[in-house]
Image (tube, rainbow, N blue to C red; front, side):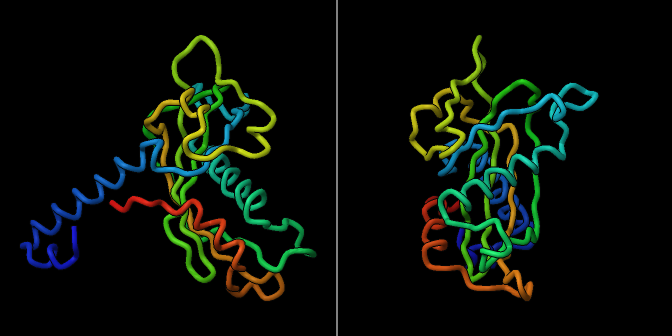
Amino acid sequence: MASWVLKLLPRNGRSLATSAMKQGSEDYHRHLEAYGYFLPIQTRWQDNDQYCHVNNVVYYSYYDTIINHYLIRYCGLKTSLLASSLVGFMASNQCNFHSPISFPLIPVAALAVEKVGRSSVHYRLALFRPKSAPAQPVVEHQDLTDGFFSGHPKLAQFDTLACATGSAVHVFVSPATSRPVGLPDDFWKSLLRLKNPIAV
C-alpha cells in the first residue's frame, strides 16, 4: 500500500492498514519462494534443550552460518584479519519461532537480501523442516560446500512453510579503524543476486 494512501486514512485505519501490511509481509517471508539461497544444517545432539527441541539461541547460530557461508563462498569474504579489507559487524538480528525442530533433523536454512547499502546489508532468513517422511533429506558433500539456489530440485524434500523466520543487519567496517567501509563492486553484485524481487 502506498504511503500517500496511508496518510489519507484516519489514524485507527492507518494502524490497521500498517498491521495488515506487516502481517502480509511476515506471511510471505514464511514461504520457500521468498528466498534465493539455501544451505542444509545438520542439527547436533547438544542443540537440544531439556524440552527435547533445539534451543532458541541455537537458531541464531544457524542463521550466522548461512550468512557467512554465502559471504565466503560467493562474495569472496576473507576471514583472516591480515588478508581482509573489511569485516562484518552484526548490528541487529531477530528470530520468530513458528514450530519446533529437534536433533537429528536436517533442516535447510534460507537466505534473502532485502537491502544493500554502501556499507550495510539487510538479510531475511528462515529455516525449513524436512518433509515428514521415513528418511531424512539426501544431503551430499556438494550441498554443504556450495549450498543451492532457488529452484533446485532438492528443495522438494523440505516443507514450503518455515518453522522459523528472522532478519539480520551487517555493517562492514575496516579492520584497522572499525569505521564503515564501502562494499567492493563484486561483493555488492553477489549480494544483489539474492535481492528479494517481490516487495510486500
